Image 1: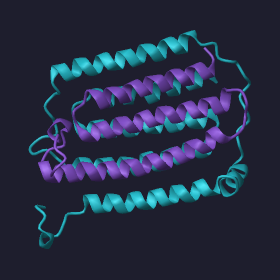
Image 2: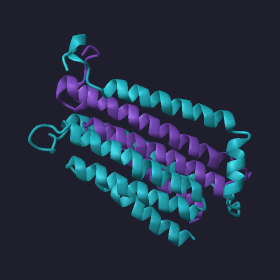
Image 3: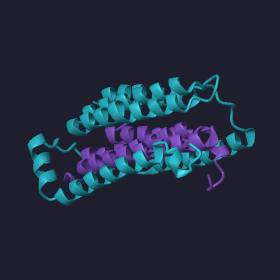
Image 4: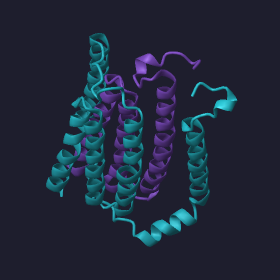
Length: 102
Length: 168
């Protein structure tokens, strides 16, 4: 098994784990953390192809840095939304938040 | 190198799987932190030192704190154990995930990837020159995004004053 295959397999496994958290767990915080895990899997793909793929260059590495920054912004806004939803509905279950009007 | 990467992959993957399966919310958040730390170690073994430290700083230092604060601020009443999701939802989710997993596995199994020599790691000085040169606009835009996200998060999460007629 080549290192590139190993990286891609780990990335696929992490993506599926995040997808399970998003689709099956009904908790808003766990859904957000699952999305973060899926973003991490995408970052791992970028790094794997930067290191082991053809072409060389450094765009893959630099893109991961920007991706991490955007993921941090997404986590901050997402957690603020979770707190706002909890204040309105006294619940952080996704199934309870089914109205746009608070 | 493959052995080291495989061990680190297991160290990274096991807490992630456990985090999804565990029912206690705080345990789950802490297991996610462990998975991110393992991923940082994986990046370090891949030769991307700066990204590894950025991952450790942002995820283990920042996102984990935000997540734990959110967990503590939204404690559901007497216990952290939420009722399990409905069976239909679980079955549908598992079907979707197994479909995605089989697609990923088959594409991984059947594709013949080029076995290239690993490219040399980028020295930190070169990375700094890249970020300050060709990617300067992107760096500034990311700073703008982070500022806007910070202000937006503050506005969303801050309780409204009673004078504004909110029900907070």
